[in-house]
Amino acid sequence: MAAPNESVNCEDFAEFQDILKLMRTIDDRIVHELNTTVPTASFAGKIDASQTCKQLYESLREAHASRERAIKHCIAQTSAVVNKLREEREKDFGDSALIKQLRKEQTKLKLMQSELNVEEVVNDRSWKVFSERCRIHFKPPKLQ
Image (cartoon, rainbow, N blue to C red; front, side, top):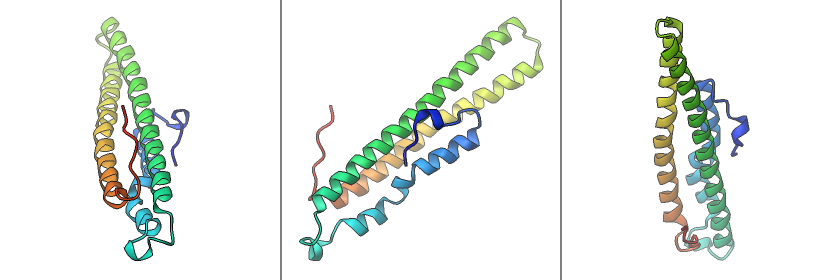
């Protein structure tokens, strides 16, 4: 589900969003996953809910960390392109094609930065649902 940074294409924003959408599958399906794997009170004895919740917790943490790395990787890469284009613009201020390319890259950078906000909302929603269903079965370790 989680792709490594090297497979994320930072050049094409639409492709970048498609990859993130694919990487967010675990978050999109968390309610279904919890409903099918964490038992209600009447079925509590048949399934080890604590182990199931622990595995889901690890999967969520891994997916969230992987997406954050991918987004930050693309932000850093696009920022470097923007900085390079700014330097080139300083040398040749009249080049309209260069200015157009700079604006395009700046827009892409802003869109990528906004994906961090989207990521925060997606993560918060997933952790809320996870907590509601797994809080009595599994206590996540305290993160430092």
